[in-house]
Image (cartoon, rainbow, N blue to C red; front, side, top):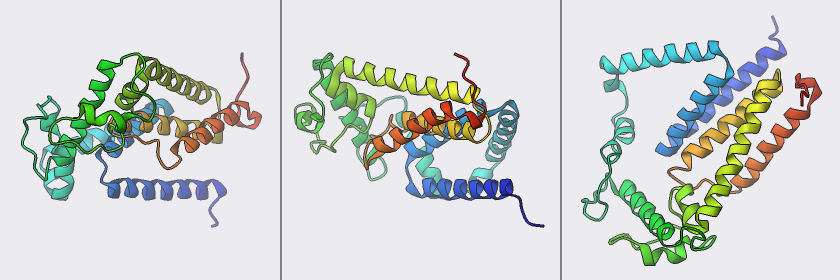
Length: 247
């Protein structure tokens, strides 16, 4: 029996998902992992009640397996990567903490966050100027962290430091509009285009969460985002998708 076109589409989608998840694991990016988890959660919740129930059951089973000793079967390096930042969630004095090979990346990132906070505190309305974070960094750098990384490793802090409150609020309003449009299309589209809109929503969630720990607007990411928003516009106007104009 020859598989139907729908079956091939599902198989291709599953293969793409496996490849992307494997790539994300191999990236070794904790911010990326958190972003993927948030995106999967939001898309699952929005997609349907059945998907939400299935996700909750799977999640509870995984948590149970970990609690009864399943964690010991995971690679030690992966466990360390996932858990070694937990002690720093309560806050630490970056200038006094002992720096080791294990915590170097975490402390370095926190030091750059504090530099961005310092810039914003001094110039809360205008910031130091777009693109001037590395230029102004020397003035705000903490001891032992004199080398600017080019950005604050937190896009929101970086934006506030460079453009002040005005620029940060403008960016947040832009993303609120993007999320609102994605939600609007998802609620009213059908079939293929609803899937596209859900995918765009997932990207927006991942981008928003991952940017808490990095700056993803590199390697023409802004162009990719523009193309995705364009897809939302196409989905909104595609009559074959089941999208009905009710305005």
